[in-house]
Length: 222
Image (cartoon, rainbow, N blue to C red; front, side, top):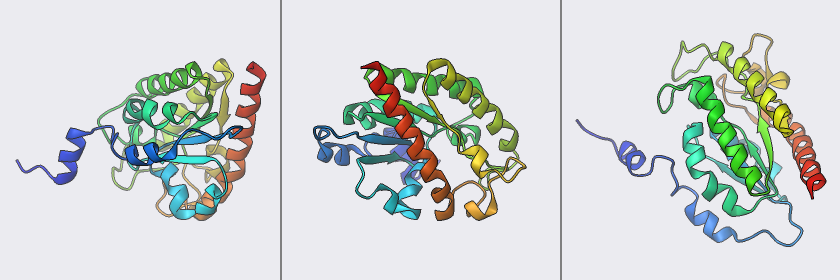
């Protein structure tokens, strides 16, 4: 059996802790008064930088998205790529790759367990949490037939319920981006899953509002 270079790397570093190791070391602690925000996620998160990089310019925003990642991978790197960076807020966008089975079969319960764990870790370290809905996707081009148009709305309902229960911010991208059939509006993406610049332009003000709400909630606890 021939193992590819990519498979070897994943076997040695499944959560990809090496991906941001150097960048994290160079970053340093937040400046006094800096309201640092870390974006934790997958290709949709890192996609901000390729499709809409100006959104991050001049802001204390740190992008820690890795393409293809699932919630168990993010949980394993959460301390290194979020907690140790000492942000005021973390924006977590995760779950679609779990539904796609990128790292094996995952139930919605298992996805929620990982989102809960990341939330609890953040809150234990004084970091305000924004939990984002999964973006709409009618099907996955790389793994068709898994019915994400049915599973994503159910997962989002669970995320929203958990956010209300924990008094944290729920960021609803889905409602603003769905085509009415639980798919992504064609004008907002390029493959039915990933946003294009217009998609990120829809996401940006929603994200800013959510970050502001999370900061206010955190200040209210002080």
